[in-house]
Amino acid sequence: MRATNLLDIRAVSKTYIVDDEPVEVLRNIHFTVAEEEFVTVIGESGCGKSTLLRLIVGLDIGYCGDILLDGTRIAAPGRDRGIVFQDHRLLPWLSVEQNVALGLDASDESPAAVKQAVAANLDLVKLADFGRAYPHQLSGGMAQRAAIARALVAKPRILLLDEPLGALDSQTRAYLQDELLRIHQRGKVTMVMVTHDIEEAVYLSDKIVVMEPRPGRVRGIVPVELPHPRNRAAADFIAVKERVLASLVNGPPLCFDAAPKSRPIVPDGRARRFG
Ligand SMILES: Nc1ncnc2c1ncn2[C@@H]1O[C@H](COP(=O)(O)OP(=O)(O)OP(=O)(O)O)[C@@H](O)[C@H]1O
Ligand SMILES: [Mg+2]
Image (cartoon, rainbow, N blue to C red; front, side, top):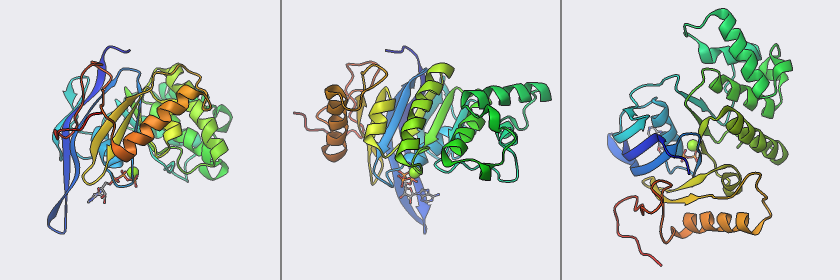
């Protein structure tokens, strides 16, 4: 188990005002992300997953509770956090390398250092030969890899991914899952990824945060203690998948956060039925 928590989400609640009425979107969200950990967040549509990522990025600071990155409350977007969305959001009039360089926009890096960082990250996502191409000349998977390079070029402490593979066909998706793991292991980047796909969550992550909707709450946290590379057909893999599914449907009998392992998490303070 990894020792230090990079991200600490403590009692986070978020309410939007819609038509002058408060709409509670997140309630009392608690979980931690350790340095170099890969955490996935799963839950039904509308349970607040993207809202939570927006709060972590610092795009919205109107929330209750604390989101601490290395012990400091997040108050604005910063270079220490990168984000990748379901659509690549590359600018069509810029080449791939110019798009990736946007991740260092307004930095005080020299042009030579920017060029070097862009090249290194295009190499990392295996797009070294496509730096001069334009977004319309890329496949969906290549465009998503360019978006990952843009998010990583500023060397963030944490990479947030909001359903980054959701729009891809299953073969490209499986390929990019392996690519994400490779990038995670090679770059030692901490990752928090939203997905709708339980198998993807079990394949990639060290732990899975299962959310429930209306308002969005943490229903349970399922650790995935399987070695890599993971075999989707293995009995222990399927057992974790079933555990996540049961948690999504019923809520788990007992939830544990990764650190400390023995501390039960009762996310919203309600008494939970065990057993
Ligand atoms: N800016 C906003 N103003 C008001 N309500 C919002 C706003 N953004 C999101 N919401 C509401 O917050 C709730 C959660 O939205 P969010 O996009 O975080 O869900 P999600 O879990 O990411 O869903 P999906 O899986 O479909 O992407 C939804 O009910 C949505 O309508
Ligand atoms: Mg979303």
